[in-house]
Length: 263
Image (cartoon, rainbow, N blue to C red; front, side, top):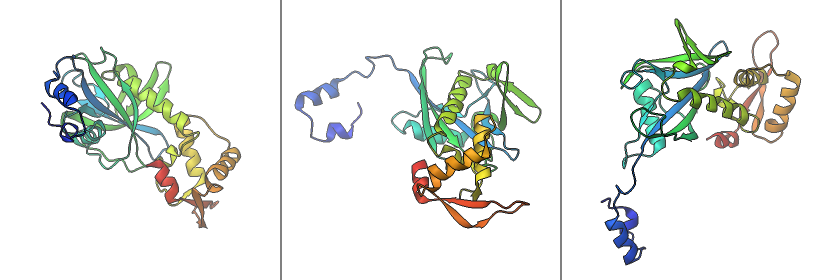
């Protein structure tokens, strides 16, 4: 029986203490719990990319999947499990994880009833470096594409379609993209993907939005919304400098207030 802090607190009645001490944890059939991480970034060609691992064990051995794994019960939270599995399988660490959704269909894993808590991690452009580890044969950054059959994932010499992914990971990825597309309309999620959050031009941020939405945006309207929502509210400040290039643009910097909103 777990010797919990609540049980030792002295703030419970004798009746409740007796109930807890005699409680049978096997009264209800237990599902297992896993954490899966949808890690998104943007490459040098301004394409939306995702980190996938090739599974080294059964089930779905040799199939591409999201980094993730089982929760170590009584030792960590699901968020800690997500961070641990991401690092163990890909070498990626110190990222901000945002909980996406809980996937709990009874047949989503052929081994048993497994409940997965999915997370999204947004990595700045050009900074994602990976290496396979733990039970992953390979870890690769794939370009996300779209065709008549749904999502595609492509890297040099490899094309994977959503139907080829392990478990229900295509469903998880599609929800993550859909949620991100919705959130950037009212939250600063797109700023996470900027290569340099302290010096960026409006055009750079616009490209990030276009990459996420998979559509072209009008620069004048985007600039107007950016100034209204971020500069006028003091969450982004204009720097007294311009970028390089043939037509130098004003550079901007995120304030601590905006970074706190993103954490």
